[in-house]
Length: 168
Picture 1 (cartoon, helix red, strand yellow):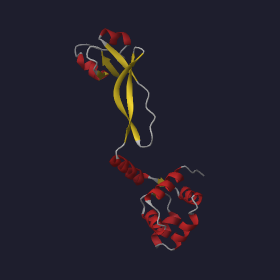
Picture 2 (picture 1 turned 90 degrees about the horizontal axis):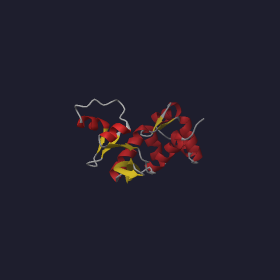
Picture 3 (picture 1 turned 90 degrees about the vertical axis):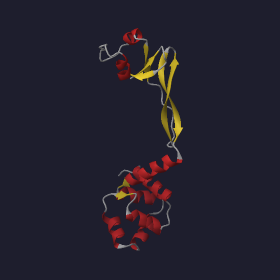
């Protein structure tokens, strides 16, 4: 819980507030009356901004609305480096079942082309296509098939995102 000290305008967490008065034994829950006696106001949680996939919410102080204090947040764009790191992290963890993957390929009109590429692929790719229980975005099989079909990373990402939405 955040609190606003009236005299200074400082915003502190309740443990910091308690530390300001080391000789005072406070109850577990700080009431509005008690805070008033110590010249502090509770800060209520304010609304979060509407965010795009390329943004995050950042705390931006407090604001008074009708005599009450609320946290304030702003939408901040991720930097290009942060977006690249987030994408790479997603790629490292993105998976789908073979059913989901095949359905996403079928929906994209690519299943026959991929099956043709599989038949021309090395033995490891053929076995992975047939028997893997889970397809990983960064697996050698995906890389081999993407290369054979000259698919971009973005196209592969889109297929994995579409596959994640498919259920049997």
